[in-house]
Image (cartoon, rainbow over all chains, first blue to last red; front, side, top):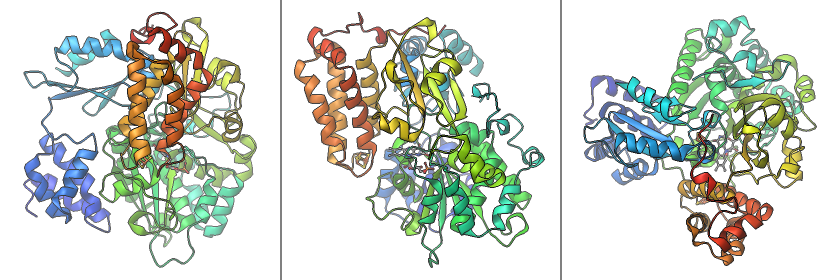
Length: 157
Length: 439
Ligand SMILES: Cc1cc2nc3c(=O)[nH]c(=O)nc-3n(C[C@H](O)[C@H](O)[C@H](O)COP(=O)(O)O)c2cc1C
Ligand code: SF4
Ligand code: FES
């Protein structure tokens, strides 16, 4: 395998490939491992990933672009993802989004100049019981108000 | 994630006692009699296990409500190919947020259910497909699986028998459509999530072209309790042909949003007013979505309906994933339908024309109306577009997108007409564009 990753990631990939009867099924787990190490899935790694799971490169590209969680570009240190779906909109998503945009000085889809924050608007996070909700990197936050958002962002350091 | 938003009735519920900070640890689950049901099932034949599930009236709780035991019985006998069990934890239907409580709290009950269901269909490999955003739940799940292997509850000799079972967690990557069972299987195979044509159904040709059962997390988590306390006990808890308890997610304009484990067949009014504390700010209810955002909406005079599959179907809606969303009298329904339609447009996989184009048109027209550019013909055109999608697509996402449009336009037509005529919301300025922040 010509994948250029840390030994730990390579070990995880080797292990995950034993979970399935063929190599292609390990594609999503491998992409997650790549993204955990690199922060995104670099285009120049697509060929090596394709070789590892024995499919044409176009199939790898197709998968990366189909699933919204795979980033094709680097994102900020903190990826703020605000839910815009029905329960969150009912409970004040739009006002909060406006607040966060002003606070960070960026629009949805942008990254702050210092590379610290990327702001995204996403569909239902399945946190509707604590709407309005958002996810920052791996962590969920609910029952948001402007004050809560201030506290959360300060807490990130 | 807190468990403080999980509620049940005064009996304490079935699964709820198993959901707190400690219960995802094996030693605590064993103290509660954990894995006794699996031992019992492993001593039974597959047919006997299926028979119990059928008698319990356990329905699929992922959305379609298909009786779980009957689904298991479709697996061909003596197939030369391996059989797979796949657990659906994609949890992506807007308004639905229940499976994470089970995965994070009743983790071992889910694993025990997996052992029993595997026994029923003779599967030796199970994949749990969990939505990619659920990083913490996936870690808790993996930790419980590791504990179970360590204690020889999973692996080559399940609970000291010669039955072998491997369980793997497979993370999705942000695509609602991968909750649809055949898209989920494609995704598990390392492909983009394009639903397959049915037949063949997964029970005949599913994962890696082998016989496969796909079940929702919640469906499977109830199975150990049925094996322990008996099918009759479970069947009696619910209403006719709809066994047991289930988890209702309640969100939107209620005083106490949360996830409620209640007997199937409790009325919607009881859920909204007695359990969820009524509409916040003392306002009136305007509309309620009973079963995830794709289910046709109900008017306030319809909420005495029993929340089971058959009763909701009888009044032209559906229980689906039991995601209840309440909207108060100040809500702009054009706005809410636009948000709903934008979701289905965003999530359409694009494989079939009626869904790809139709969801795009619905999103576009509703957005234009929302911006004040509505035309009277929109009011008659929208149901036409929706009807053009219904029943004409490979998977039910097309119907899921069409049903809310048809329902909102049928039940609240005046509101859409008024938008089209006056270019603004009849409730005043587009109230929902600047919504009240929760007190
Ligand atoms: C568009 C679409 C999305 C779905 N999303 C989910 C989901 O997130 N979770 C789920 O369990 N079932 C979902 N389903 C239902 C599954 O296709 C399938 O019926 C279910 O997982 C079967 O399990 P059950 O019989 O235990 O309910 C979805 C169906 C459709 C059409
Ligand atoms: S109905 Fe929509 S989501 Fe389903 S297969 Fe067709 S295009 Fe894809
Ligand atoms: S609608 Fe925002 S989390 Fe479900």
